[in-house]
Structures are given as C-alpha cells and as structure tokens.
Image (cartoon, helix red, strand yellow):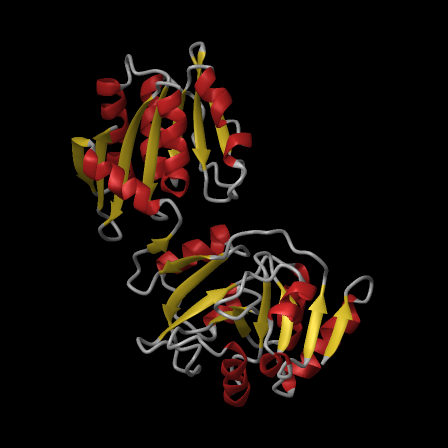
Length: 359
C-alpha cells in the first residue's frame, strides 16, 4: 500500500492513480463529502475486490463517479429530469439514479437495471477520472458500521486488517470538511424521488395542517397565476409570513414565487436563488425574500439571512423548505410568524399538482 500526500505533486498523483486503477487496484480518494474507495467501475475483477473490502454491504448497489455529463451518457440514459440535474446542480454532492445502457455489471448495476452516478465537486478527483477516461466507483471508504471518513489516520485505525491489505493507494489531502453524504435523486421514470433530511417532518406537518387550496396547472403561466391568486387572498395581512415550498426540480416552485412577487408589486424578474441562497426583491416599502436551502449545510441556516428578513417583517418564500423544516418551523413558532406549507407534485412533463396548507 502506498500513501501519497498531496501538495504540489498533482500531476504525479493523477498519473500514479491511473496506473493503479488500470491494474485493478483499490484507491482511497477525496471527495467533497468524505474519502471514497475507488476501482475501475468497468473491471469485474476489481469490483469483486471492492466487495471484499466493503464486507457488510448486502445487495446495495455501488454508485460510479464520472467527470462530465458526456461520460455519464456513455453508461446511463439521461432523460429530461436527469439533464436538468446535471446542468444545474453538478458537480456537487448529488447521486443521480438513471437506467443503465447495459455496459455495466453488478454491483454498480442494480437488480432493476439502474446506476447511481456522481460528478464529485473535487478538482483532483475530477482530474483523475478525466485522465483515466472511465468511471470509478463512488462509495465511502469506511466499513458500514464505522464513522464517515474525513481523515485518513482515523480511517486507517477503523479499517480491519483484511480490508486494509486490499488497498493499493491512498490519496491524502488532509482533513476534509465534515459535509453530509450526497443526496440521492432517482430519475428513472423521468420524475424525481428525493431522499433528504427534513422531508419526513414536512410530510408529517401537512398531515396535521388544514388544506386551504389545491390546483392542477398545465403551464408555467397557470402556476404563476395560482401564485398571484393565493397572494391576493391570503397575504394581505399575514406579514411577516413564510411560504415553505416542497417539491422536486421542475415542479413549479420558482414559477409560483413569480406569481407571489407580481401580486405584491415586484417589478424585477424573479429567478431561482439556488446559487445566491437568498434573492431580495423590493416592492413599495417592503422586501420579498426568495430563499433556496438546497446548498445549505447543517449549520448554515442561521447564518443565511433568514432571521434578519423575518425580523424586518418581510414575506419569505423558501424553496426546498423540507430540508430544514423542523428548524424553520421552530424559528417561526418562536417569533409568532405564520407559515404556509405548499407542496408541489410533478405529475407529468406538463401537469403540476399544487396543494397549500395553513400551518
């Protein structure tokens, strides 16, 4: 086993890693979430070696890491929903589940014929995959019963000798940020199933809340119109207020917010705040705060500006509110601020079901 400390030797690390992968070796490498264990995802012998390393994994499939959507397209079917994710959210801590094209085998190919694909947001790892020109496995380097590996020394202490003996190369970039595991997005039916922390709390909340409006829309314009109608009917007095939006990519959350803004008197064009976290739109003497929690880490909500907007008495629209719903709900309860939970369901390429609950 060789351990490479990364400093100014990136080209050497890339070259050595590709050599090890081409010989069917196991490589421990860094990502934006944790240290992973990688082999050539197209090499059946290397995959069997990986399964020996991971031990208690059961039948759970192993994802692959690629360097681009072009590489992903060689191995999986990229439908409209997956294309949206690749274009807007990757590289990043996301695993996209798609139907395989038949040129991969178990354990990266599931029993249903699907494959999980990642584009890591870590430049060294992207350089390795791009140079190697084939996907590598993307699974954490720890045993299933051990802690997430953010530090090589700790990982080595946790690994049983039989697994450690299978490792050929370790790429050590030091302590990694303690980021959560990747979000898993299933796009196999051209709809989206998302596994996210907080989703359960949101679903439980709407069961307890009173449903006040429901509408099926067939165009973005109809979704905008519903946002205007809701605002006219309910937001004349309820300010400050939080609109907690939950729904998959492309389900209409931003279009609905455009309708809210138009009815309030916002003249600017409302865009998705995914990369800015909060967009602010002035109207009259007030502000519409349009927030997206997608990229926020666990400890970042209180630093995002949300509290300041609530204290200022603004209308706050939060996309992906279910990710932090428990925290958002507690904050609003403490500040005596009304919350509307708005759920968006992606019925088809055209149809969206929008249901509004009074919290």
